[in-house]
Length: 336
Image (cartoon, rainbow, N blue to C red; front, side, top):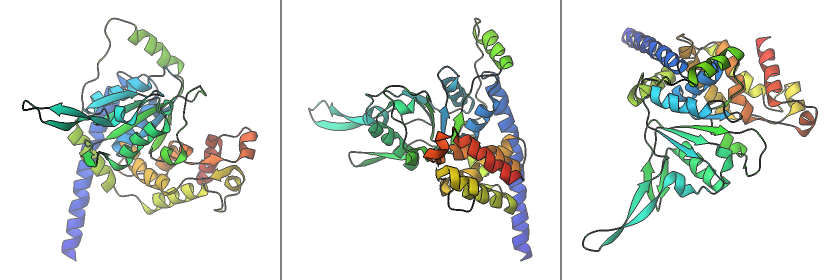
């Protein structure tokens, strides 16, 4: 029994040592990204959290708020092979996944050869994902879920790590196909990108209209990112934090005894929301320089994790309520 205990404590020591090394790596990543992306701290934080947790993120904001720039910067700082797809209504699944081409060798024999599409990247920027037809969206979303694709009966594994950072324009425009709820659930987080603060916007004007622009340096590589992602999954989560996650996620579902939810919410988040919260709360602790997640992490992540996993009733929408208002109310109750 004594032997078991020492092994466990050694294990804990190893995790603490690994976590401390990860803290310094993550701090360096934050510093490097801030050289290129000014302001937008919560956007940068939530996007990095999605990657550290091993998931995908959906960035929602009007055009021109540096969403694409953030993704390319992250690719460079994290040392990942990045590709970008601009989604359009005429984009086909094969434009994303790749297709078979006919080859002919010197002796005249013909055979098919698979040419990989842009999905074969470690960091894939899916720009304006709601512009493509459902068929094309589902090809990408299947790859996101299964980490492999099948073409003509042949399976092709995607590179590791594999992250999709998709952007979506919230403006109601012609030719958009909103993502169905089941597909939105594939995204670990929804990150809302708002207009920059005054000081940040002044910095943008001064820094980005001169001759020399800052290029970010690689801080880690893909192998190190996988190590940090593994560490995130090994971090212990205290009983009180687990309880807080469960009660928050369950309070967002109608029929669970929460009066305001029963009144305003048509359907709420499934177990994936709790899974996302368990991972992201640990990653956020590291991001903030701590070795264990706290209740604050859970409450801070409530909006990005829950908002795309629930919908309001018609009556609540008619009263001008938003999903964010409901989540803010749930967070307030959880604090109370």
